[in-house]
Length: 322
Image 1: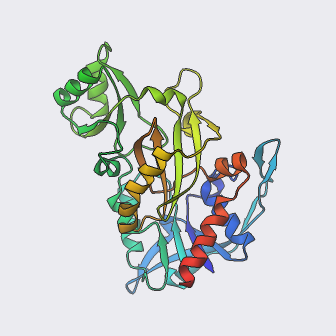
Image 2: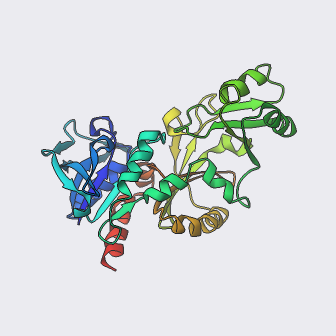
Image 3: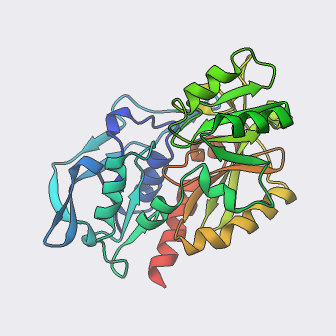
């Protein structure tokens, strides 16, 4: 297979952490051609999606003393070649959030790829549909009590009823801008004003789940099926478990309740052609649905002696052969 990965600059990727690198590495080990590009290098030419692609050769990471280690020169890229993306068997859209206007424009470019020739993972339509905070709100049976509002009085009433809540910007990533708020906080009004940008932008306000202290579980779904999970445990006085803010990865099983959550979410993911997805679960409740560039593969692999990257590429081989 010929596979293209739309990524952030490869110089900024962490080979021991980034799921994109894990999948590219697995594809290469399984004998497939791997190419990379960036969103800024895509164009529409004669009604088709094109991009400057570079072949990439990766030196696989090694597990040393329980952690992934990469060589200093872990990748080598070829010259840029302007290529119609339909020459690829699959295109992985793996640009990190936030979902900005340029990001949305990129999805419009990817819309012009003929799906009968090339599979896009995840679907550009699905990426536009699934705001990583808002998407979860349609699964009311498995989420904590949640509101979305920019109205201070609505937010204040909710927090006062719950006594404590978590405020989340709708376009955030990696735990950025998430605040823990108590009804008795002396900065209560100011925090709402700051979060909503003086009432001009809605935010998500979610019931605080005490189980967050025990960790924020990331469950990886492949075509709707859970294939692995990692628990991200807050460190120090931090209430957020995101690895981007210091959360520690811990081995964990997928519970029956979490499989129930996956079963509730899977049909909609399938309808929106969202194939590689990360669910965030705290205390048996779904809190977010991550679709842009879900991470966690490397942590799950090293803690469980598996290779989710190879599972993804194996799934892709089967899907494209049918």
